[in-house]
Image 1 (cartoon, rainbow, N blue to C red):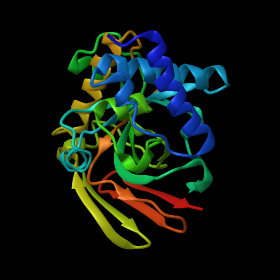
Image 2: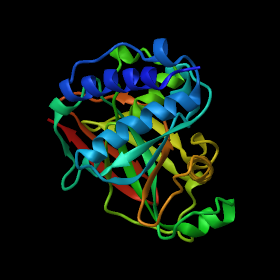
Image 3: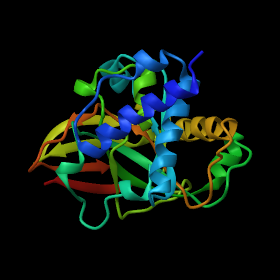
Length: 258
């Protein structure tokens, strides 16, 4: 059984890497492959940042795409917590010094209009206010992305930053499972995917995180943003690159790394 002291050691290792921008070793040597311990370390890190002034604004679902699961050698989804400090506003210009080894992926974001205390799939669907295209800039505090699922969970699901598009749609106007996505870097196509590449349907990812969050005692709330997971492979994101995700029928979203 992992001790409280060991959980705090894992948290401190990740916190130092986040603060200094210098990657650390994996934390699985401390917490093994216990998912509950990994989420406990994640919560320690989030609470540390909240106490320093950050605000919780949503969740992200990770490891939903078979392509991404294959890239990282895992076989199930996970989730992390979105903080207000992670939201890149305005024109999508991202500051590089805050990142260690960024990669980028296109997603569909759900913005909730209602609390989800009962994560029944129909009630989850009803709670959605609108959808918008999103780019998630994932990042790992662990050297060379040498991670297992517990490493990435403890590291807040390898969260970095995210950008939301300005276009909005409702579930009555747009069917997430049928979405067609194209990702370009400097006008060159580097990734394609569909809504079905995200757990069969991005709504499945939303239901999964709603159920998981409720079980862990932090249910989803009105106003929260949920990044539902990658629609295609994640791509390295380098300084000077202009990334554009186009989700047909929903809109575009851009990011530039300084």
